[in-house]
Image (cartoon, rainbow over all chains, first blue to last red; front, side, top):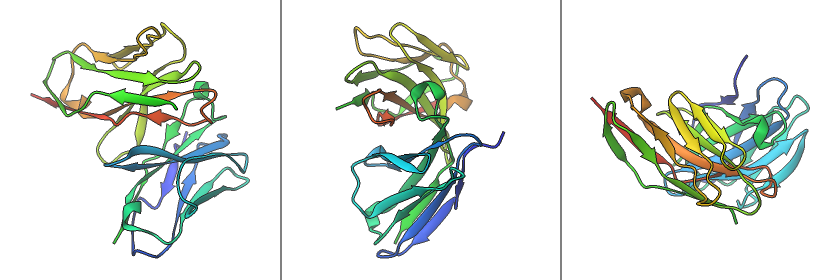
Length: 114
Length: 113
């Protein structure tokens, strides 16, 4: 079966712009989570969506937002980009978002802010 | 809050050497524990997991035992290969943790011929 698909794989944006990243979960998975990975901060949780509702949010500023559609595909948006937003953004899908179901990660979107 | 502490890397080993990567955790409640692996340019792959105390997770020759008394989940492999070179992340999930994984900082493993 198809895995978690993230698009685009690479992105270069200018400071002050906004960006939208996309994640298509495994078919049948209803939970989508987003993580930011940087060399300095490691892997940090951004937010989780389940059946179009945000269930949990990490400690990130309001410039980071997301949504989930009825087909479980999710997007995350970052407005007013800062240099520090340069990171690998990873999406993970799960049947129900509980540990026993397991999380499957996509290959990520590498965002570079210049 | 929940946290995971991993040994600093990089860890450099010769092929066929024994591997141990230490992982300890702090959590409220009863966490599930995971090891993920990340190869260059890729996302995270689940390597193994354990959901309760004394459980042993295993996969591809890697093993880790959930030790509640020492709050540890050390990763071991008896004989590493060059293809095992990657970054390894220890992570936990708790029922009160809001449906998210808390990761350690990662340990880079380099295996040489």
